[in-house]
Structure formats: C-alpha cells, structure tokens
Length: 308
Ligand code: ASP
Image (cartoon, rainbow, N blue to C red; front, top):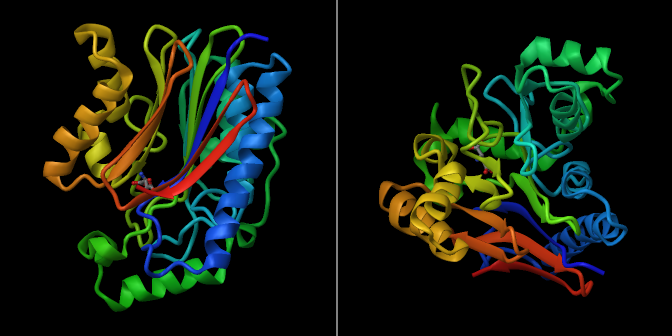
C-alpha cells in the first residue's frame, strides 16, 4: 500500500487544562478518534484526499462538542451562522460557504460547489437556495442548539457588547478541520465553524475564506486553520505558509511555525494550523494553550492530543 496521511483539529483555545474534567477529556479524544477512523477508512481503500477530509469534518460537524455543525456557537441575535471551505490540491478547485442557517453539513455543500466548478464562494440565502436545489440535507435551525453554547452567549453579553473579542482567556474557538494526502499523492484541506460567539453584523471569519483558513496545493501542502479569525484573514495565513514553501523553499514545519509564532503571535493572533505536505508529513503548529488535534497514517496508528 502507498503512503497516506490524515490530520484533524477541533479548534485552538481549548478548555484550560486546570478546568477540564477527565470525562470531558475522554469525550474529546473519542470524538477525534472517530473522525480519524472514518477518514482513515477512505484513504486505506485508495479513496481521495478530498473525500477523507469531507468524511472526517462531517464527523466533527455532527459532534456537539465542537463549534461546527451541531454545537455551533450563537450569534449576537441568538442564531447560528455557519461557514466552511474545502480545497483540492490537485485541481486547485475550491468550494466555500458562509451565513448558513439550515444546511446540516456545510462541508458537504462546499464539496458540491467544488465539484460543480462554476463558483467558489456562496453566502446566506443564495447558498441556502443552492443547497436546496442540489439535495443537501437541511434541518430546522434548532438542530444546531446546545445549552452550553447558549450559556456562552449569555456570559458574553453580560460582559459587554463585543465581549468575545475583549477577554481572551474566555475565548474557546472550537472550529474543526482536516487535511489529507491520499495514496495517489493528492492533497486536500477543509475547515468548518460556527464562528465566534456573539458575532454581529454578518461577521465572517477566516474559516470560509480560501487562502486564510484553508488552502491546498499539491506542489506544497494542505492547511486548515483555527483561531482568532481576523488575524488569520489579515495575514492570509494558509496561503502564506504554502508560499513560504513554494518561493522560499521552507520545510513545512518551519513555514507553519514562522507564520503562527513569528507573524501572528506578536499581533495577538491566537490559534494554530494543521498541515500535510506532498510527502505526507504532518505538522501541527499553534500558539494557544492547546489545540484539539489528531492524526493517522498508513500504519493505522491514531494519535490524539489536546495540550502542548
Ligand atoms: N477561526 C474561527 C473564526 O474566527 C474561529 C475558530 O477557529 O474557532 O471564526
């Protein structure tokens, strides 16, 4: 069997180590493990990186533990506005959505957009209409609700209007993502999120923006990001990592660390990335206390981790 690899994340800015219970920790490891198993199965059977990424992200979207799909955070208006993106490193095709309120799995909608290859990025009611026309699974918005996220919104509001951006230690991002290299040597990346708690005015973060929260190029690497989206947008983070490899011949770990630690951190850009290069090497880089993450390769050995 040829080489292949898959890495996933369930967000940077984890619960503090001092605050997490053993049961909570176990639940996160199990959810990460399930997503990796599902993606591994695709890759082991010579499936495409794109498929493995979609399958792994779908598992994480369906778990209420993460801020994507079910379990997404609330906007200031008490709604959910989901976003996601997906990119193929072989063809350069991409699909992205934002402002999603009723599509159960935004990453599946991204895949459809990517395959259709007419547009890249759809927003709000138009994206919803496209989903309906293309037989995507839709749900009542109440499907995304969880008590835990509702409490987070109440707390954010009690602490002032833009609270979520003002008290860093309280921010728990929880976005999900996956990157993969398949047996054919092709790369793919995908990212999905509910965004930031208490977001207003149709705020869109990096997770749905190709080049910022997601990027894949067979010549360099595939990247999925998580963190304080405004900084990832300003730095075009995922594309920057790929460019350091492409134009400055950096190794993947050095490229990722340069962007995450040297560029983002001094600005206050908390977060991290998962990456895989064209040889299947997996790299994690984050400047937050932790990042829910995991990986698996052709040997089938699964690793999951939360803290540094
Ligand atoms: N990057 C996401 C955003 O800013 C948040 C996250 O990674 O959890 O919307």
